Image (spheres, rainbow, N blue to C red):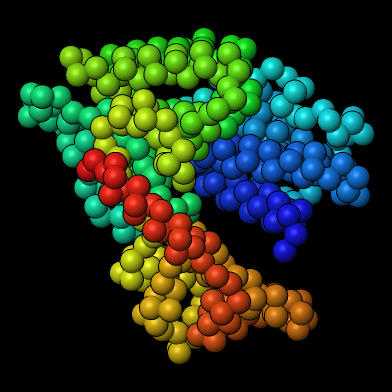
Length: 393
């Protein structure tokens, strides 16, 4: 697959996930996915300036930006229920990106939301959940039992699509915390110039929330974009990173018993600067799902589908070793789309009473044979090696 096709596929995947999250009410995480779709589309335009679909890419990027603004309550008319975006103007200049049409503010880049993710929705990951409960949930419930204080910096690392964001949202729901969702890539690309003030403002808000008696969690996705090792930093980046370091020190001060936490997520822990690594007292590997977790995932993602009598979810769980949680969801979705596509092609969809056939074991086998896990064996080895060197459970 060509590089342009890979980027197109990635942008589509981000957009689909954004719409899904948008519809279920996870506004902060939806915005993060919309932003990733925008950035991927604009990367396509920059890499292939003569590509015939660039105007479409710009229109879609601007439509997603409009939806972000609508979610944030500052206008916008694009709705997630439809794939048809409204026409936009001034798309001739591909060098003008949606993010440049309005200066990004603290309120636009830090999403405050109330997650609604139950622990049971975080399938598997028992060791990671146990470590997070010990670090966050139990101290919130009984702070009197922790005379030595408790960890406030939690690093979640591991392959993409394995549940790092779900873990953070799950613990926020469990303790009814104020949840501040920050996309590190957005900070680096849009906050320079006023980054220090925005970082300071973020942590002032966190400390005030915690000081008023409500737990507060800052969730930073793609942490390596923010505090990774950089060899060619400009002055603004250095100052922003130093400000973030200072603010983290303020949050994790063991002399203060406020319930303010920083949870960072990264797919590239080896890119993190050691000065920041040591400030995350808990460093937790979020691994690929094992057999039992894959079985529970297949049960979860097929619970609303019509399955044929020959369906064997236990066998599917065995032959899907190495697949991430998002891979398994994609497999279930692909099998369902295959059957629905056949149904429409047959012309039977015109009959409103007719229904697609049940999904068979062969449908799933065909999907699994046609795709490979998104995480390679070498990547898994790299995560395990880093975990052995830096783990702190």
